[in-house]
Image 1 (tube, rainbow, N blue to C red):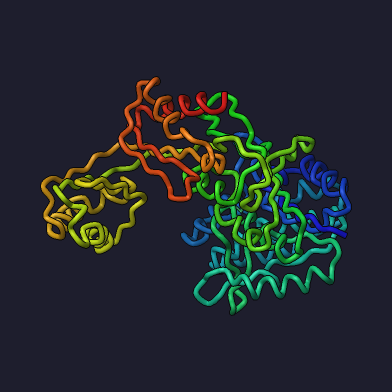
Image 2 (image 1 turned 30 degrees about the vertical axis):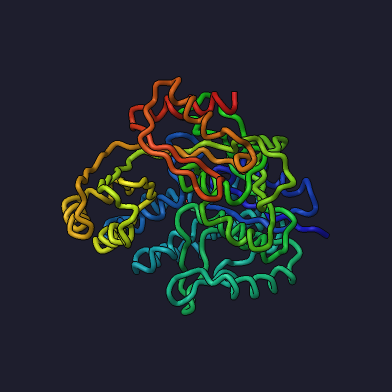
Length: 437
Ligand code: ASP
């Protein structure tokens, strides 16, 4: 039988009503055999995620402050779900173990991981699926890096034993058995790891939106949903700040070319977004999505004939590296080059970096400009479509937006334009209207 792996985010498992919805979804298809659970998320706008409560509780305990009240709130969240679902499950011993872990200042990752541990136990009981503790099947190496091969071997063995199972997301174990978590939102990665080990035909990532939007809905009214996006395009958009899926969640499934389908728990009939391996088979629109970020600065270096000066670029980049900073982009011309960096980073070393570059390459002019926003226009369809860049630039010109920087990736998968932060939303809207509306 083919296998689908499902991951449900915190908002999909926030209360009993959502648990019922999740169970309906899982039971709707017999291939839906492995389920990865997040910790309970927010039930409404003013609510707190259980993971955040666990971190707060940990901070309080480490300052020797009283945790009774917050710990009770955490227990209540789970007990309410259990009571409303009407299942026979007594977690009091587990709660006591966790309380003692707080009081003994046991690992921060350990206590944070209990959010998914408890939720997965409840879901397994409710679905009547086997519970597999992620501690036993997801591994990190001594240096804290995820151990993909060991995990895949062990997890594969477990999945072969259990036809249907629930696995808590977000954590695994170190070689000495202590718990380690991924970064925030890491249950997406667990889902991907399980999909790979199960040789799944599909990884369904269930959340509270009907897929990836073509642009940020805070800037564009009602943006369209992306039907199909490739792993590479998604990397470009996530790097630029589009969130829905954890950035690292692509790597395990990419290995086996398993597609990911972003689905909405509240609207299971919506097709959502398919994230697929790079392919020529699927017809592409010219652009797949637009994403952007503000908070960048450019260091511009001017020197006549710099293009013929051997090692010029290397020496500039070395000056930045020696100051312990990394750069984002590096557009250059014949007599000028610019280095784009995050303003937050640069601010710490502004003077040092300018001095180091002057010493390294003796420029005629060097200056720093702030308040730059970067916009990435991403699309596999651009490779074949002539005139895309021209359309981006003329859309910006018609909207009266000055372009401060241009960078096109060599893969032709994206065009990045830098604009003044004040023009950011106007620029996004102009590009969206040109290609999508
Ligand atoms: N519960 C964790 C978090 O809030 C992990 C996850 O939900 O994916 O970050």
